[in-house]
Amino acid sequence: MIDVNMIAYGQDVKGQGVGSAYNELVQLLENFAGDEIRLHFNSDKGCRINHVHTIHPLCYTQMKTSSLPSVMHVHFLPETLEGSISLPGIIQPGFFKYVLSMYRSAQELVVVNPIFIDPLVDYGIDRDRITYLPNVVASKDFRPLDRRDLRDIGEKYGVEPDRFTVIGVGQVQTRKGVLEFLNIARALPDVQFLWAGGFSFGVVTDGYKELKEAVDNPPANAKFLGIVDRSDMNALYNLSDLLLMTSYNELFPMAILEAINAGLPILVRDLDLYQKIYFSDYPRAKEDEEFVDWIRRLRDNPEVYRKAKEAAQKIRQDYSEESIARLWKDYYRCFLDRWS
View 1 (tube, rainbow, N blue to C red):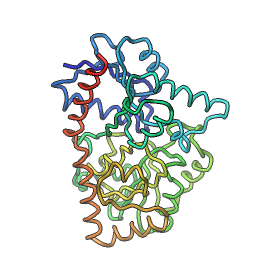
View 2 (view 1 turned 60 degrees about the vertical axis):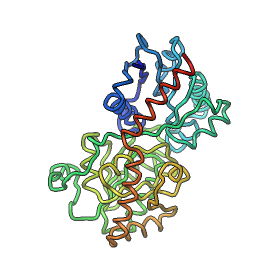
View 3 (view 1 turned 30 degrees about the vertical axis):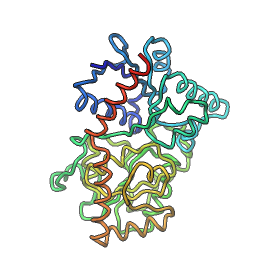
């Protein structure tokens, strides 16, 4: 049995993906790898490995004072924070330096995004110390449901059940393409658009003033639902017809895994990241007009919609809980072989 100390503080900020990814990994390891891996939380007593999940100072302190080897989970790079939060100029360089110091202090890094590897190498971290392992979501929490059983949730969020519905998910941030999401909504007034997510980091959110104005004054066919309780998200996916991701910069979006497990097709911005992690011919676009055209086709052509759902299900199979759990078992065993 491998005893692992899961070190995480500050992951409970609502509406942000790091917390969701951490909780999903804990569930995965407990439910699918419990025969080989036993988890402890913020205590290295009786453990053989530290697994650090957030950049909170308490995580850094515990990692530095422990005699155990540590693996650090990398959910973002300093440059990927641009478009997410806006820090005063005097603070930002020091914060970036702190993040990289923490990454360098770990014996190994696990990245949720393969395109992080080269930049980390450029920061002076040995490539052999970096491993890519994807995020995962629990199929028991995100799965297809009968819409007829979801009327109460639909009424709670003001979802009109008879309209083609497009859902966007994520923090309200510049990099998430929120303004572009609204432009697309304005071009399709007969389609219902929902955005699940809010300002998790308040006024330090990059572009806060402009985004707040947009959120407070959306077109008539668009609703901002705010930060949605996780217990309601599966129902909202099932009340929707399409997940739309207009982000310009993504880490490893949990929303895509959640939506495809709920049975939705996806339409995403054409990013290099997606092509490296989703081995499927999924719908993608670069400009607002292309997104609008895709939504029209998905709404009006059943064959186009069917193929998009098939592409999404191919992604779901590639990221099944069983396959990801096997990867973690193998990783922890190899990590101990290298560092014990």
